[in-house]
Image (cartoon, rainbow, N blue to C red; front, side):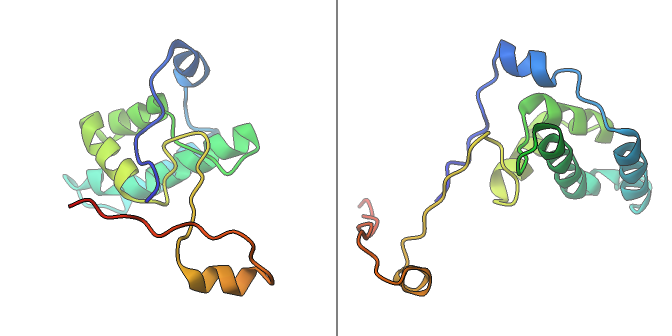
Amino acid sequence: MADRHPEPDSPELRARWGAFAWTEANAAKAREIIARYPAGRQRSAVMPLLDLAQRQVGAEENTQGWLPLPVMEYVAAQLDMPIIRVLEVATFYTMYNSRRSVVSTCRSAAPRRACCAAPTTFLPPARRRA
């Protein structure tokens, strides 16, 4: 299972992403996304807005994208919801990267056989704690 804890808050992180705001194009998309939901239910737009924010961060960094804490706070403020609710969504769903670098490994034998002609190293199966 991937590490689902967000990147630790730091002055460098705040300096880089503390002034996050939508680009003009993404601001229009965000308004369109929020308008899809009935009055009082705009918080339901948290998932598409997190995706939009992750894509914008990725475009700015020329990476796949991730969600720094100030960006999640921006989304929370836009939807008038507590940051903890946004964090719950961002850390629960694996489609959101809440850390800069994400490394995930598959411990199943099927993908290893499918993508490796001659696998040389196998990860031991995960041990369950009693």
